[in-house]
Length: 142
Image (cartoon, rainbow, N blue to C red; front, side, top):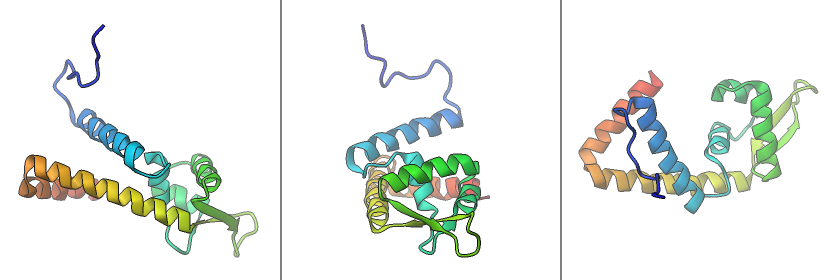
């Protein structure tokens, strides 16, 4: 039986497929060299300002349901990446704040992502990679 890893798709790769392939490489690198976070958990952690946010506010920023975001927050709290406290303005609301361990995880992840950027820029050329990043940011951010 032959391995299928690295096999090319049967169709011309479309943008979501290419983005998924790049994201898979990032996931692999983060799993190898990064902190104990999945990219989906990292995505939630990256949006937290120092002063914290309610779970509803965080959910809106990361474009998730409040319930789904709450599950990620519980996972991050179990990993001691965030702390959850009762909001001053509403006893029913919870404020999520990043911890020192969470900031360290962000720094370690940023280093892995920076290394990926450097490798890819070397592979395709610094100028082409710079333009790629600019166009991608323009498309992603509007």
